Length: 321
Image (tube, rainbow, N blue to C red; front, side, top):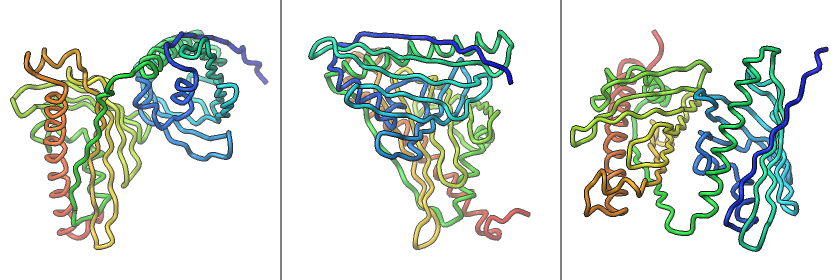
């Protein structure tokens, strides 16, 4: 049996916020997509006391990865230890800990510890892991500090649009999942590229036309659960946003058909408001502009998904031929 060489790293950052506030952000993984740039989606699979099994989807060195980890919370010591259950190549195994240390009543220090080994003896694999750990650790600690130190309005807005479809949820899901066809199916999409190396984990890049005729490029990581949900996070954003996560949700209705919802969570980039919208624009103006643009495109997509599914139902219930 090969004995793996264990490598250890430590990254630290000082935060102008109480340790308890910082620890709360670390402990609650449901907030991680909003707090940490690499995290696309996070779920608690099971929880017993201070122990939990979580599943994470995140980017690393420009690629999308998913894994499950066991975590143990110690609120008294302000620590969360973690160990990946099933790592993804080139990682052979990884664990570590978050440790929050109070410096004063209003300041703290965060230590992010990792131990890991590569899946192979190839030096390139180890270098890839070290670069990913260093890059993500720095991003995560800086983002954690930004979130913990924020005291003003968060500018985080959430909104949704829903349509009812007299058709099958699977047909709606297929329309939303098959984004490689959106350039042909959606008038507001000018170009699309979809990569799916791992089934259900997609990287989607597309050029989208706005109502004013302008075009912007976005790049998203999408986590797809057949027939029910597509969760995504944009990793290349338009100028007016510093965060955009979303969810397509398909729910069966008791009366028949399905309800399909497009939900968005957005943080406005306040530094770019006047650059994009003019000198008189305000955060409220920007929020309304972004919501209108996203809802317009979402409703257009939902309307075409509805027409697609209902047409298939009319042809025989959407069964495969």
